[in-house]
Length: 503
Image (cartoon, rainbow, N blue to C red):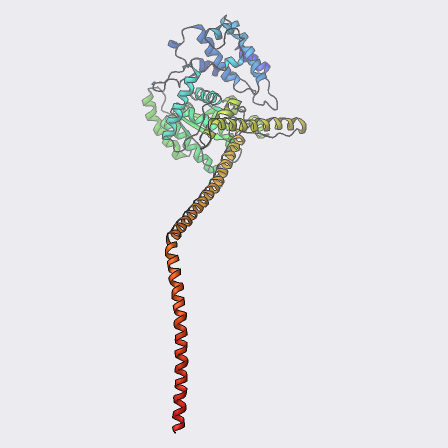
């Protein structure tokens, strides 16, 4: 309560921090998070302090925008620990290994404290407990991701860097609680839906979304939300409803969600047939639960609404860009009051490096030295553009958003350019190789013909001699033939002359 009062006094809402709104529901969320750990596993005071620190940071700290606010919150928690537990937080963090000897405890050390139910994948049920090894936590997350991709029709290509581990753990913690509704705030491509999907998969919950079309309107929206609520209330299994701000076709959709978050029901949603079906199913559900509830329609419908609130987890993914986010929070207060906020900040340098390294390592023909250089180059481009956008905002008061999607598009453009250049160079090399092969083949054929010509040289000389002799003989025979022809002509002329004379 001391931390809650200090937070309400120090962190006031502003136009850029319109979600800095705190109420007693936040205080209750801290308490619900603390009681998630079984009493049998919470025997010593240091672990209780760490658990309380973790839950307070999750409820109050995850919605803070910058490090200056996080430092203020940590100072409030630091003082509250000694005031209420009579133990210094430095001592607890040092004894448990979170702070090295000689260093001062800070909010960065507190960020390494994790509690979750994902460290024992084969346990049934999974116990919410302290995470002792972050590397082992990353291995477990990789295991859950492989399990999800093995059965999912749309596998996710995620890199389990520290930023992703933080948000998956935060989403899983909220979904584990009753009325575990979430408001995920971040720019497009920051990993909101991926973190939620993996967290829901760890808890064996189905994530449902509506399919938006050009003709999607109020009737289609009411039909989808009615089917969703009936599935949660009648079947009785936990469901996660993911709704993004890019799916908002009209503001009445947010008004319905606002009512759903606050009461668990939407007025005038069910027709007579649906109400009859609900009351019929609730009679069997009441018998199975063993609760003593009146069988009046009003009491049974109230029981149905309680089942909906217990089984349905509503998760909103919204972007802080523009005035729409601020206006919607003002118009629909349940988006803040009834949801645990998780703010997805800019990717840290480690995330940029790990993501680029994963994609570039899949490219063929790049060795380790080249891969490291390409990763640094991509990271440099992104960081430089972010710095230039900040300078542009300071000079011109115009905001240019550099999102993780832009970074992924940069890597994709690099991959496409690399593939195109490799293809061009490969084609040129093949043409060069084929030309050399043809030249080599031609040179070999010329050599064969020269060898054959040398082998035929004696025959050619002999044939030339015989040809010359034959030509001489032909000339001689031609002379003889010509003389014979002349003699024959003269003889014929004479014969003709004598014949004519005798006549």
